[in-house]
Length: 440
Image 1: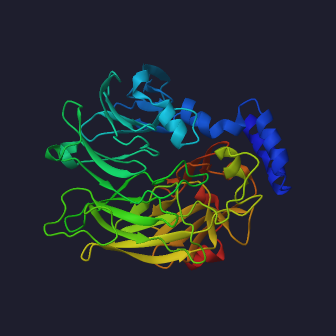
Image 2 (image 1 turned 120 degrees about the horizontal axis):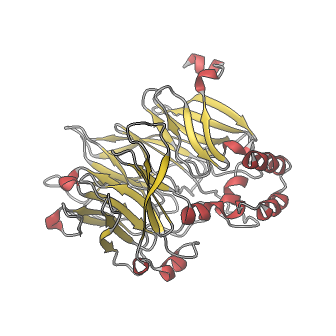
């Protein structure tokens, strides 16, 4: 009940537009509400995975842990701590992270499993580390070369390179590293690895963590006639959608003008009407040849009383306008280029990772309309036209604030996501269908 009571108290401050009162309240909370975002990275489990043995593997701060089911044959059996493994101190670089980010020190900042069966993590300071999936012992590590090069997001894994492909973007460079059958990491072309520079840009305010891309790489294109790509947004003040050839570069390919590498298949500036500041801390959402992005940066960087991400993400859209902008793109595998289908400047996505509903043919955000601040909605937009085809109104209650979480939907169309105050489940079968959705 503590979290529910806190959400009600926060709602009163937001409704009154009392930013000072809200800050004082957050500072006074025994569960360190003000530092919740950094606490989650240090002590929670921002990134995790489930194994085929029904184990939950997570990382926090500087350790990896596994939680097992007491009886793997029963989904309702008790859970137990299976193993905890500390990452060696020598694999972290506190000074490098302090120079380049708002974080006080280095930590694990991404996690996945390679297709050939190794647990993989990365650090803010620019290391990729492989671990044995059973013992959680470190096998190998790779360090980026740049003195100020950082990994500010997680990474993607792919079936390429015999199941060892790791796609990770630093604030200067897109990499494909390769994990071999023994868990060793390779960065040489002979092993199938590659790297390519991109537009680094400038350091931006929250929710951006630093310069460079704010996107975890997304794989796109899997069919026999589809271009095989890995997609990010770059770090420019007005970001571009950047697609890299993730496997072989086509024979006879020539580097496109204005790109940093022949590995870049195409890049296209994201155009949002009325603004020249377009940047994101979210992954590119993809479905088939569609891609969707949001803008997370306000045109006017008005200072807040405290820069803590949890506080800022609570204010934006409620006591003051949030960032505006969302855009849809489509990839053409015949001409190897992006086409922007539309851009909207009347919707605001604060910090939640958007998603695409294939069956609904819509991109879904958690945020606001620019004529209704402090009145939160889930907003679904048609991929081809950008028209609003779904709205779920939540009002000013901050319990619906997704706070950096991704939106998830189950097979019945119900929405799940983590929020500022706990895990939320929206039962869409109990929602009344309004005139808008009836027309759809």
